Image (cartoon, rainbow, N blue to C red; front, side, top):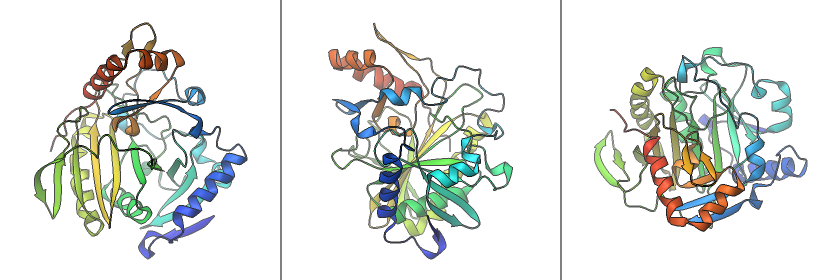
Length: 327
């Protein structure tokens, strides 16, 4: 395990450290399965991924009523709290401003080299629930993703909303998802033309108008990470007040630049796939960008049989489960 402070800069071999840790934990069965074996079906602009092992992960089939506190639900004991989690799964430890994160392999990954950045269990209890608690946390993540650089991306999936809006998170303990975007893929979201709506504090504020999932993004250089974090934190005011769910995606663009997206979520029913079952509205950040995890073989077969239907259902899911950013 290596430890570093973001204030001092990240080690140059950070990506290699992560990859070495992944290969070790995959070989020892700590990572439960190899996601490179996923079956992928492309229906442009979407990709559909079938990993049967992921459907059996803990928390994958929640049915209880949404918590009254919604996104503010208090942290409860979970597998991330124990000493075993750190001992068995931590690869790198990083800190900034006294906030410590364990970079650990995701036991139930969606893609190879899928990690979690998990806040240490010894942090103040009020900072452990799975929501953003202040702009400094966003700045931490922007600086870390800049240190990693392409092709890594960060995703934050918040707690479930009081209105039953969902973001794909299954553990109420503060953590980001991070993994390298596969080199063989084009990004359905990033490859589309973006509209810059205005500029604020040297940052571009914009939207990918043709993308069905409602969002806004902030784009700029890493030296402006604090300003970007303040803006995104302001945008989180309405979801936090409503106690509703949201997703954040952060993408390094190279040469120290980044783009950070906010996707506020809203409640929607499951999407019926005729003759094959239902796709839940509880999906995460990777899916909001166009990579859809399919839970059953029957639904994947339906995607293959009727690609146009799959495209229509996916567009409707992305549209119906997101809401515009309120500034």
